[in-house]
Image 1 (tube, rainbow, N blue to C red):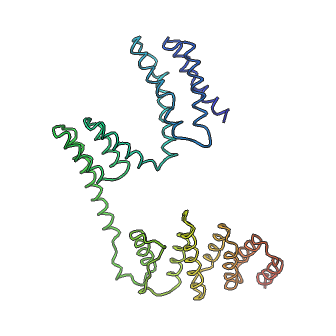
Image 2 (tube, rainbow, N blue to C red; image 1 turned 90 degrees about the vertical axis):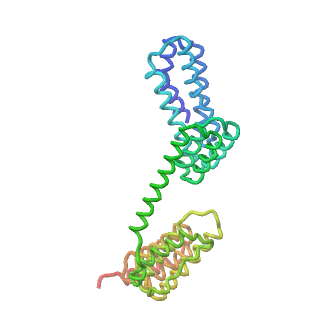
Image 3 (tube, one colour; image 1 turned 120 degrees about the vertical axis):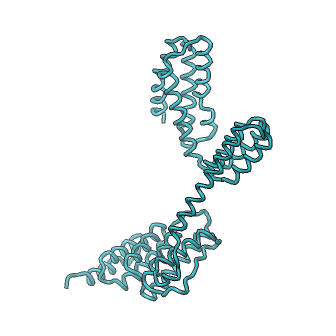
Length: 339
């Protein structure tokens, strides 16, 4: 970390030297700038970052001071060598911060509300807040409410009407495109009741729209229980199982749902070999050794001639530290040896 910080300070030396040569800063001030820069660079290079380290980033104030000094002495040259590198660094630092704290949208919305409570007499601030809601938070309704409130405070300000009209046009265009996409994707389910992909699509859409707790999946009574349908359903269960969640109860329910689906499909002998291998490896990756071994064992019983299936079972047994690895290896050799 010290080397990176030192390197970044050294990158600033050309513009600091220009500041001293042009007389905008004295030698003592340049030293003070370097000390302050070192301190703040260490702050934004730590593993445990804080927002304050980015907010207090020194070069913003330094840039303002340079502009004031330029105005005072009337020196307007070498901006591309002094200010431009600083501006690029400031943008880079705040871009890092925005990536690090992506979920700060709600806080910024609250900040705009507080600002407008104290500065309701500034139309530009209303426009800025509404644009934030529309373009960054994708909330047309919040943007609309802000514009309507702004127009009550500033009924004779033309720019507000222009921006409000532009926002409504953008929203209308977005709705129009969504309608077109929906019409393209629209399908008549009654014409495809025997198509497993149709039911897979419908089930996924229902889950997205309803988002019922407990991960209950829609049933497809009309579709026949055939291999392609069970394959889609099993893939869906595994996808849900791999999704991250901090809820132990939800993880448990997803595991139970996945295993119940697997055993039902296994009883019906409607799953391809690939899914036995995928599920066993997935469970092994999640350190569910018992379940992984059970799935691999079930797969081997159905696909005794598959080298990959035996390999998956042996891998699960090694991870489980089973005492019967040699026995199973010999069994695999018996089934796989050339006839």
